[in-house]
Length: 272
Image (tube, rainbow, N blue to C red; front, side, top):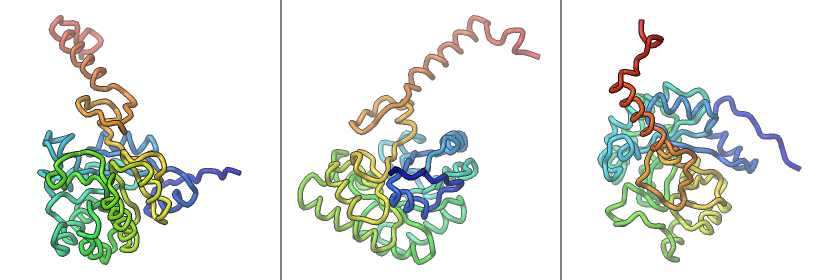
């Protein structure tokens, strides 16, 4: 017998745990600015991630490494002003938490105070356990991120699927359990085999959100610009494009240029 879906006026960390317990899948998308965040939030998405993917999507960098803490706070502040319902999670950018737990705490506090974000996300497992623990002592919710961790791209050397080999899969499972034990409220699993991701999700009491991790996890996340088809160079297997905005927008821009050049725009009804 199916149970009625609970309606959340405001999604919280506790809400995500309830969704997992009720076997309700969690929806998560990225946003980096006010206008997009308002649309995503009003559509009813559960979680908005202010991802360090802004480094690629908004600034045009090849990797996520260049984006700064100040820039992340700017993007997060813009998103927070737009939302009424979604839980907003903000990535701690590269260099703000690795190897120094005091810096990690300071960075997380700045994000929470200056942007109004609801939680932070960090990439890594046992290597950053001290930073996670220290952030949690301040009462700041932490989401983990395992599998493909884009901030470590130069270590991996590639964006291919992670944890296909037994040793890496074993470490991923150990890290996932550790993150739960430390007190993380959820984990993102990126680009790992679906069977492994399902096993991890079933072994934990906290939600596991997948991107390229199959359907056996507790929810899904995509980069909004990718799923809307605004980007077109990037076509991984896990990406479903729900629109082709690249073509639609290009056509609109070309029509506008044509209308201006031909003096069709503005017409008599479009002027004062």
